[in-house]
Structure formats: C-alpha cells, structure tokens
Image (cartoon, rainbow, N blue to C red; front, side):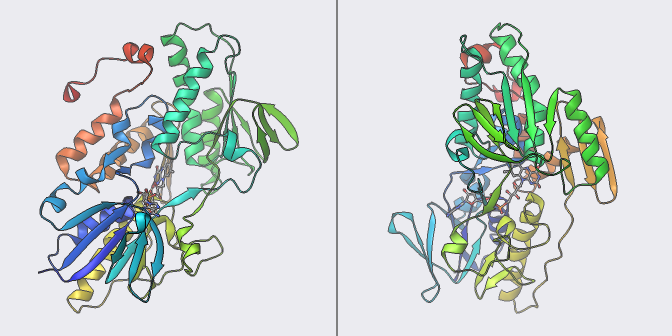
Length: 406
Ligand SMILES: Cc1cc2nc3c(=O)[nH]c(=O)nc-3n(C[C@H](O)[C@H](O)[C@H](O)COP(=O)(O)OP(=O)(O)OC[C@H]3O[C@@H](n4cnc5c(N)ncnc54)[C@H](O)[C@@H]3O)c2cc1C
C-alpha cells in the first residue's frame, strides 16, 4: 500500500506533469489540489480571445488525470492553498480544509501585476483567464454594436508574446465581427504600447524587427519607449499624453503568486522562490515552473521539465538513488502574429513566416502530447482549427463545425 503522501498544488503545466509522472509509481499516495477545475493551455489564449474555440485553451483536470483518478492513484480536490504549517507538514486550504503531506510540490503560476498604476485594475481588460476572455469578447461585441459611439481605438499594453499575439489577431477578428453584423466600415486603430525601445526585449534584434514590421503591415500602430501612467473610463495617459480608448488590454505585467511571500519562502529580487538544483525550496517542499527562481522560469516548457524532474527525483529518493540536478534548457520561442505567420527562435536559428506558423501548430500538438496521450492530444489539437462565438449572429456566420465535433 502507498505510504508516502505527496500533495501537489496547482493544476498547471508543472503540477499536471508531476502528477502524471509520479502516478506511474505505486509507492505514492497523491492528492492534487487546484483552485480551478480546468487546466489552462495558455499558448492559445490569444486565439480563444479572438474567435478560436474554447476547448483548445481549457481542459478539465479530471479528464487529464482520468486514468490516474480511476486507478485511485490520484485524488483530485478543488480548493485554494492558503497557509503552510511546516512543523505539522500540513497545508491549510480554503473552507478550513487541511492536507497532510510527506512531500509538497507547488506550481501555482503567476498573477497579474498592475505595478500600482492608477485605474488599470478597474478599467483594463485581460486575457489571462477564462472569465477575463469572456468579459473581453463580450465587450468587443457590445462596443462594436453600439451605434452611437462604436469603439475605434483599441490599445494593447505590453510588447511581449501575449500582447503581440493579441495585436496580430485583433484586426482580422474585428473585421469578422463587423462583417457578421453588417456594420459600416469605419477607420479604427489598434495600438501596441511597450516601454522598451523594441518589442520582445528578450529576443534577438532580428526577431524584434521582423515582428514590428509584420504588425505594422497588419495595421497595428506601435508606441515604443512609451509608459502607461494611468487609466480612467475614457482612456490612458501614456508618456504624459492622453489617449482615448474604451478597450485597453493589459498584458504587461505579472508577479509571483502571493502565497510564497505570505508564507515566508525565501525569494529572489524578482519575487520568485529560491530553489536548489533539485528544485527544493526547503526540506520536503519543491517549487516548480513560474514560481521557481530558475534560468528559464516563465515558460510552459520549463514548467513541464520541472514537473518531470521532481517526479523522477522523488522516485529516485524512494529507491535510495542519487538525485538528478535541474539542467535548464533554453525553450523554443514561437510567436504567431496574424494568420499564417510566426517568428521563431530555436537556439541560434531564427526565422519568421509561414514555416514559423507550421512549426507553431506542430509545437501545440507536442504541447498537448506532453500532458495527455496520442488520441486525446490529437483531438485537442484539432480544436485549434475550429471557431466559437457566443454571439448568436456571429455563431450563425461561422463555418459548420468540423465532423469530429458533431
Ligand atoms: C496568455 C499567456 C500565453 C502564454 N504563452 C506561452 C507560450 O506560447 N509558450 C510558453 O512556453 N509559455 C507561454 N506562457 C507561459 C506559460 O503558460 C507558463 O510559464 C506556464 O503556464 C507555467 O506553468 P506553471 O505550472 O508554473 O503554472 P500555471 O500553468 O499557471 O498553473 C498554475 C495553477 O495553479 C492554480 N493555482 C493558483 N493559485 C492557487 C492556489 N492558491 N491554490 C491552488 N491552486 C492554485 C491555477 O489555477 C493553475 O491551475 C503563456 C502565459 C500566458 C499567461
């Protein structure tokens, strides 16, 4: 009978991967706690926010872990981690529930950070969760259908991958909504605001320039070296000047989940948890993915590798074998910008265009394969090619659903 109690907290890339790997071993009793019933496949969020299917971005955790739950290897619990009692090796969760552990694995992901800029939390939109995407799409429709003052200025703040992907997809999506509703053509503006002198400040100059060119071709106006200073109901203040907009999307800031600060973990200057080479923050506590202070933290591929490493090391520890060290691997960056175009950075190889788009599509299939088996991963991947709208007019205008979904 399994005697070693493992508590995995957080149903994201790191947590799910750790559960899948660890459950291959019979000696662990695994409890999986997450505050969301769904696993979020973030790379396709921009697409779901601009008319893509919801299924490509959200997968029920109970579906991903169905086999493990049925075999009683994993117990899934919906709840929010609140407080850690290290001495009693107990995690306190929402609704006063307590979970005892021998080993705790935490992968809680990031939270949005507005850096204290006035008005952003109140007035801006975001695409970082299912609810925020629904709110954003509803707003786009409502604004475009408002005869008296339809929105003409859209502002996306943040020149990282999420802001760029959204800015690239938005012109076509707005055109589609207008066409579906037979709305009069009017000149509209999509602005992308970034504080650095170039988009994608962490990528090569060649990639930044290629992406900037592509966005300009799609009609997106770039405001570089531009800092947002505040927002109210009618617009933003950028570099001291007002810009009118009722649709501002904030993609420019995240910070570590507050759980770690609230519970006295040792943090690096970026607020991420300091871990050793085995991703251990403290005895019996491992921290993964976006939460851990590792070289390539902040990418799904890193979180997956972290989940795998921690599971491997728990098994090795159990078998009395030496532990493996984390070997950070530079993730492949693929950024889609509008239809059939993506910029790629794969080690020293950089390119952009249709081949990048094909690679991105293949990378998503591999991404789904990382968390599920061949047939469900392929079905999941097919959902990237479908469209979904809640608006009745737009739903009618969509192409018929592909056969596999009917
Ligand atoms: C819009 C967007 C697009 C992205 N695109 C890419 C991309 O193209 N390629 C790439 O490599 N990376 C991308 N990323 C980054 C990538 O998604 C993250 O690095 C990855 O999700 C990190 O995995 P994780 O397991 O650390 O956390 P997450 O995947 O964020 O999972 C955290 C989980 O913890 C749960 N949780 C949070 N707090 C609690 C709590 N207190 N108690 C219980 N559960 C809790 C959450 O609900 C969630 O299920 C993107 C991120 C975003 C936001």
